[in-house]
Length: 335
Image: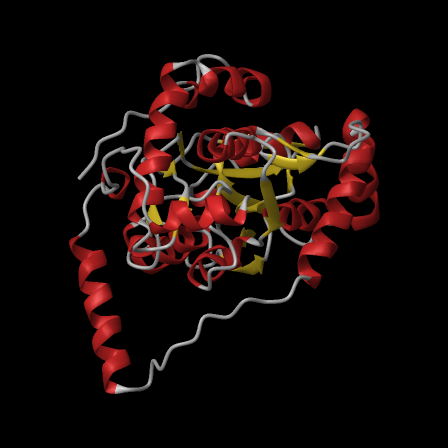
């Protein structure tokens, strides 16, 4: 049964079949990347006090997408260090179709997608050359450790701004609006984020807001207690593969990513509408205020001069549509 579903899924990929192979290799590469670990003495009294303070701050946070610093072109230590180095180090995805991926039809093998366009714009405005970028493939669950350790200057990887994450990293103003959604086989009886998930096995990415939502809703009873949410993976594409293999019944992820996955495999489809509202932001190190302000200034210009819209029309309009709530850049409000 699993073999038949896999063959059907792969057959349905058509023109993107080659891309699937490349993405599978990309996943293997990412899993072989050295793990970045954040260290801290959580067992000490000081560690407990810090954790309690951060938790209290997260609980007091309202509208996390409105907590970024106001735009500025002023140069500080972080910007000076980047310019002295000569390139921008950015954590990205390399297997999210239309967001950050390697197009097998592109002989150069360069990364493409909506997030990649934004990275090139940031590099252009800070360094005067859009190609002065060192891309680093970062799994979903390693985004924050990569920033905190200083391995990257920023992460541009469909990363949702949340109150909890704001206690660990800094975010730009939002650059994209989306929400969680269910992806399942077209033939499935699942109708959305509802009682039809009872007894079903759901896949989500480690460290994602999707898993956080699933876990919270299981505790409150919004999600049936019999729903199995134990399957978590480093990257979203792994969930699509698990779905094709018949190892899970559905995937929960951002609707924007789910739409791209449905475009990769015509045997799966979005089930129901989005059931949360989330905003993507550029994540940076806490204390790098000059970089945060500079990125916010770049985002302001990117929206105003049509760069954002051009990128959306090229990469995301085919899967999300021109009339989607995601088709307009979200307004920026600063603290």
